[in-house]
Length: 254
Ligand code: NAP
Image (cartoon, rainbow, N blue to C red; front, side, top):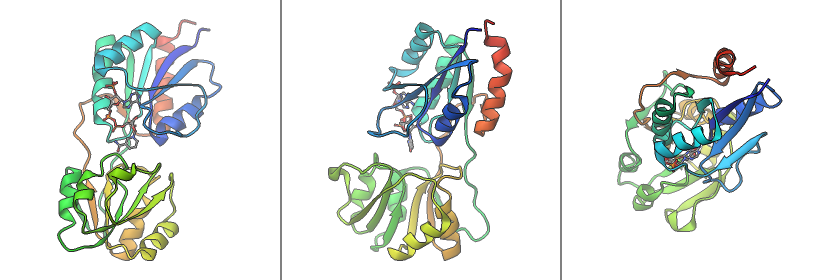
């Protein structure tokens, strides 16, 4: 049986989970694609490729040239350009396609969320008065917070930001989730954090800070997700595996 070539667009815990779950599965020949932003990405089994494709057309060309039959978009919920390109490339090539889109976090009793659309709005929502802020929106787009320089930032990212991107008053923490509620609570207390800024990434890996904020009565500035094109989608790794189970029969050349 010739294995079916599957491309997973990665950069998320789900992409890593899928790659690990499919390791050793002879029905699929799996390649995980990473953007190449992280110097030391999580170790994954199988073939890894890195770097952009050149838009939707570039991805479509790559899928055709490499003979991929199945495409799974498992990028991070905020990687909206790649997500749009994936939908478009699937349409252009006719490969079997599903987007793994984890549900967004929803506000619960006791939460004190301010919803904003952009990081610029998030920085503005912090106000003029200097405050200790827990900032977990990633190391790539720090400019709005560098401008809101009156605040003290406890900045956590997987890899350290470039020194030139940093706000002037900052405590840097590099760490990769999942995080525990007790640790998040201790961190918020230690730095006397008054407000948290986060993207609505969803999922369990980074949700502990929201539980800690709820328990401590802290406000959260929540950056809402980008609007994405409609696509056939699943929400979990397990559902993606079940979907693969179904498509395998119709794509294999056994
Ligand atoms: P983006 O704005 O949607 O993508 C910008 C460009 O980067 C894409 O058009 C594509 O270039 C390239 N690219 C993105 N993901 C790629 C992948 N998996 N494989 C190959 N090329 C990729 O994405 P982003 O927000 O910069 O995120 C980059 C990566 O980091 C993604 O893989 C994402 O899953 C991960 N990530 C993002 C966030 C976040 O908050 N944005 C958080 C955690 C992880 P071409 O057009 O040239 O193909």
